[in-house]
Amino acid sequence: MASVADFVLERLREWGVRRIFGYPGDGINGFLGALDRADGDPEFIQVRHEEASAFMACGHAKFTGEVGVCLATSGPGAIHLLNGLYDAKLDGAPVLALVGQQRRVSLGASYQQEVDLQVLLSDVSEFVQTCVDPAQARHLVDRAVRVALERRGVAALVFPNDVQELDAVAAPDREHGAVFSSVGRSRSRLVPEEAELRRAADVLNAGSRVAMLVGQGARGATDEVVHAADVLGAGVAKALLGKDVLPDGLPFVTGSIGLLGTRPSYELMRGCDTLFVVGSGFPYAEWLPREGEARGVQIDVDAGMLGMRYPMEVHLAGDAGATLAALLPLLRRRADTDWWDRIAAWNEAWEGTLRARAEVEADPLNPQLVARELSRHLPERSIVTADSGSSTVWYAQQMKLRAGMRGSLSGTLASMGSAVPYGIAAKLAYPDRPVVAIVGDGAMQMNGLNELITLAKYCRRFSEGTFVVCVFNNRDLNMVTWEQRVLAGDPKYPPSQTIPDVPYARLAELLGLTGVRVERPEDLGPALDAAFAEGGPVVVDAVVDPEIPPLPPHVSLEQTANIAKALAKGDPDGAGLVRKAFVTKLAELVRR
Image 1: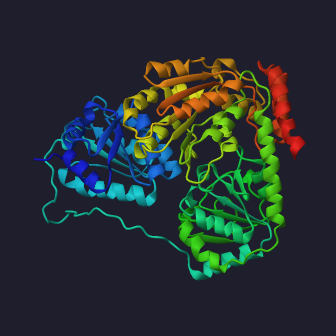
Image 2 (image 1 turned 180 degrees about the vertical axis):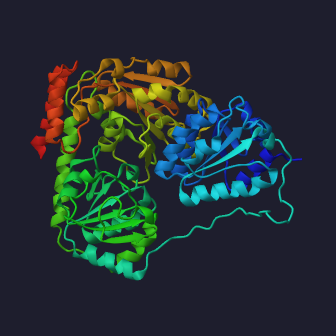
Image 3 (image 1 turned 90 degrees about the vertical axis):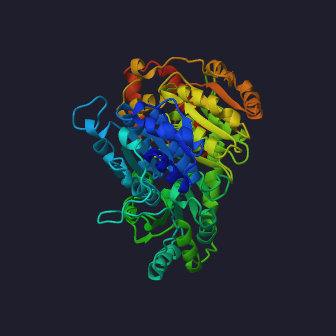
């Protein structure tokens, strides 16, 4: 007789789930036994920490569009999931968490590892329920998967460990209160009414300097976005989660926007008379046009987000691709190319700035040079994952994604520690595609090193083995250090900011992976050539200079004054910081 846990796995198979990320514990013994009996379908991917299993489920969901599933034991296991689950919640990734619980008879007795999981998981979840009867399992699984997919968020199911091992009930008795649910999902495309589309077209056609801002909601609508930009003569900036929506090489694409963004995106927003937002919830008002300076049109599948980031004139609730396809016949082609010519000039100048910044002398490596060289080495169809920290700036500004490439990171939560788990999930889903993880040394020490063990455990199954983990080793929690200087006017505080110089390449070799440590600019290109030719996982330990500033596209007077205050208070890296920041900024001013 099949158990409840057996039934749950079978039901998930029917929903297309083929992989579950997790870590064992006695609170999920019923599921572990069922996974053994399932003979690898779905397969269990053993991580080193439950947080990583949630990150992997989130990464799987982001890169495949499928529901990602993670499994954790009761109490501490469930608590460990939360950070990765919040990453999924805030970035709109469909994830299902299966969590164990103490036996039903123990609940309410302040029992060992007893935590009120309904309360714990209620904020992070769109749907959370505890299965207390075998007859519930069928509709709980169906509802949880459906809610996760349709609401693009987290669903959580809690199973007391005695319920996991009870006999399954595939169909309850047909009586009052019984529920009979089904597996299956038909995709629909939401399109606004014709009148609203015409209103939007009127606004867009009236603009002479249209700026488009696209986010991850525009993924799958690349052709429509390109067509709209072409017809309107618009420039297109990208929110960081939408970095892979359009190739960076298109002449009207200005790249990332915001604090980590580009100067052309900054100029685009300053100079536009019409703002057209497609599938983005980019939150920072200071990087958008001033209120009243631009008319606005927004497309978002989530009507609750319309008009929440900028005062829009027309709010289009709809799927990005379908809505743009319906809107395009109503748009008039703009003959005047003056706006596009200005955008092209900004892009050309910015590319020169990026090149000059990467060439600034550093001790020992300039991190911008590392990112630039890494970008140049990316194979076709690469999947790039980035972590949170100063390395995110180099990813946003120096990394150029081409057509067919994918990229993602912890965008809204901006959590450290996501890049290596994301990369492993991407490689398991697409074993024939190269994967590159861009990680700061802080995130690497937080959990990246542990997940190298997971990478070593599973790497032999990849049909195309390229998996490059590039560690930006600056011995400093660099983004926070710069935030202390720029935002608070305080000098670097070494007790909190300086971290150990860990031999990442040697540790990789101890795990059976390939490790390369790079400390000289002339060795960087050959090291990356070798890493991408290896055909297996490689950790590149790039020893970079912490004094190279992660400059925003525009430095305000307040930020400049705060840096001066930090220096006056005796920043321990003051002398080198001043020289390198001046040379880096000068490289931009010369080319503006």
